[in-house]
Image (cartoon, rainbow, N blue to C red; front, side, top):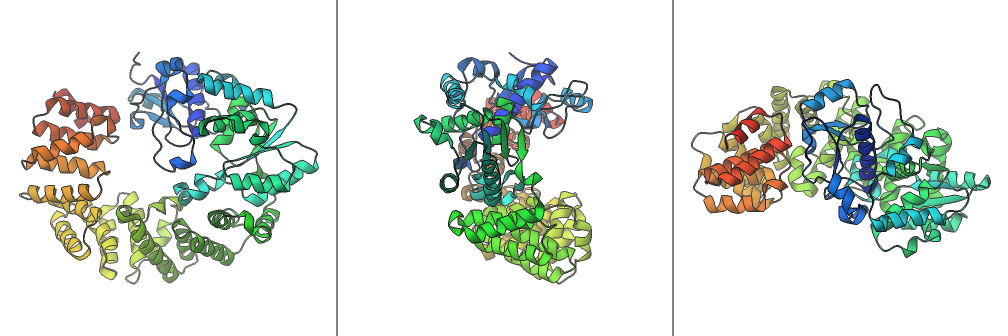
Length: 575
């Protein structure tokens, strides 16, 4: 059954189980209140998948629910996203030009302009409309039977925000320091409250259970469950039976709150600041055996980032330095220190910090290092003005950071000036690669092509440099074969990058490399492409080698992903 353009409500989350379930519950609620159809997608999780319980949808939902609502072809760009904001008349108007509204919101119910506000308590009835599979239904019913009497839940999320890639983006509001967990359990116990403790980190559960008289899901039948997904759902269902949940701002907690209509209290939000600081620092000293290396780093960073109002600038810097020494893969700590140094009028120190961070990052992240460091996004973006005032010809890495922010503002000419100066002051594959891409953006293709070749000669097989060379050469008349060679090399070195794949296929199709282009497209079918421009390029490649069916399929995918792009629609109409 198809929905008219602009009328569909969808839920699309590619992260953890809790976020997906909350988005589905909210999507169902919004669709019901607005009288629209509801669909959801269940994409494969690619980042930190080992820290989450993401089973195939067939194991979680009933066949009837999947038949009615599952749509694995949903493309987020085709919808107006709603996250941490209400559905206003403006959102509804925007959705009519696309395919509808994508509900990404998880932190409580979604408000709709002109309709009554829903409370957490109201969402339990909506949650019950999710069609779970029979095994998952049995798990939820088991939780209702096992819990007898009043309990208060305490949930401490760890997982990916301590041990996975997401720790590099901080997510401090999702984290509750171990000292805060101890304090709330101690206070609840002193009041005679029965506490159920939940965490995705087994050592934390073991340590706290040895210290306090608390219950865990293992005490209430979790050991009988067979799969990781069943145990995750069971934890959610047990929390949903409690009177109150004390936690951080976690989606897992919110899933339980929505399921049971249970209020959530953010422990850290209500804590006395100075007392919490001393609790954390004392806890680190008193119980070092309770902290893994990465959890210790997370606590040091958390204090530095969240308690700046009760510590000095010097202590904040020391804490961030200590966190980076423990966890040198998380460059965000260094970027925070650099920003602090700039704020204090110490550009030389900021330069030194950025240089160290960038060089370490470049050695580790390979292709992504062309963006200097992927964790820049985690540092606040409200300081470019005073940062530019610190620029001069002594600081190449500050110039790169400045270029990064100017690039986000679309100020191409200024970007080139800063990245050129950075390369002049500190020539390397890192500074040169960034400068090369900026030259391409500024349409100085000849200079970019020469620089790319110089960098490749000096630094060898780096996919980002070959990609830069390919983009530069592709814009120069008579250089298509060389562009194909460059993109093919980039694709060979980094075969999961579909941008390079599409360019290699396209320029292969223009240079008589028909078999090579076919092989590339066979490895990247239309359904696997998630960016409209890449699907568009593949469509052109398929068209040139005479595969009209494939060209039409890629064109249709491009329109599906980005329906507002006129040239995508025009191409599809040509088939």
